Amino acid sequence: MKRKLKKYIPVYVMLLPGFVYLLINNYVPMGGLIMAFKHVNWQKGIWGSDWAGLDNFEYLFKTPDAFNITRNTIGYNILFILVNLVIALLFAILLSEIKSKLAVKCYQTAIMLPFMISMVIVSYLAYAFLAGDTGLFNGIRRAFGLENISWYTEPKYWPFILVFINCWKGVGYGTIVYLSSILGIDQELYEAAEVDGITELKKIRYITLPLIKPTIITMMLLNIGRIFYSDFGLFYQVPMNSGALMDVTSTIDTYVYRGLITLGDVGMSSAAGFYQSIVGFLLILFANWITNKYSSENALF
Image (cartoon, rainbow, N blue to C red; front, side, top):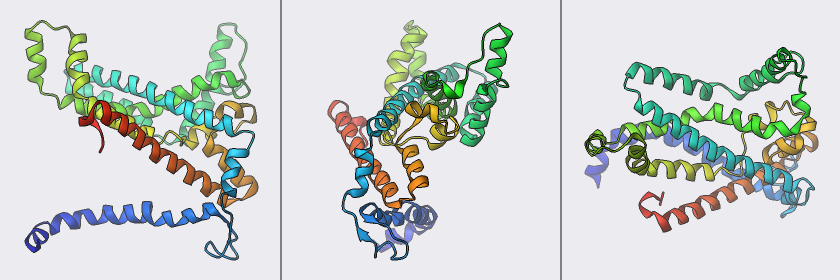
């Protein structure tokens, strides 16, 4: 044991910064979960504040908007997972078919740029396109003799707008992950398939997709774990917090934020985060159990 410890000391030293960061950023704050069960009074301190039991959780479950915000949070995330999966796989497969390395690098850079742009910038870009009289889309409509659309007061358009922006913002990351898996496939399999006269579509169906299935399942499981969370910038900043759009843009995160700003109730906000974490953990366990049942070699554990 001593010899092994001595041998791997350089590895442990390399591991130390990441471990310290994980400990400080992910585990130490877990002590704050106690606020979810307290009426937080900063004069008394967190530990000295009165116990609230489950009162803080009632804010989420008894509010008249509970069904709406839960529906939006889950519904949008399911759409995001499915749309991003299909588009990312499509881009990854198309890129893998490009023989020029320079072209691949150019495409990779192009699809990753939106991922590196902050949601604040995305919200301003969206406003530039959707603004009333000055927006690009309404300018195009006027050029064709059509009337302006008041985008920020018309809820019916926003499910499509939000799905599109999320896809445009995040599909690049998934594309790179899937492309890396595809490029790791033994090229001799494709060469043997070509000798047998298999078409390109059949190569994708019988070689590419089955061999990157573990990556697809892993990405799906990770996304399912966050299905009760929402991109705060996407649902709050992009719609410009428009009251007319609340029915289709309000999620658990934005609702709690508005409640925190209005009421200043830290305990309620902590309860919401605790609830989201527990549900996300249970969903990962359930999804992994399903995966284990039908494809045990691709399960996380």
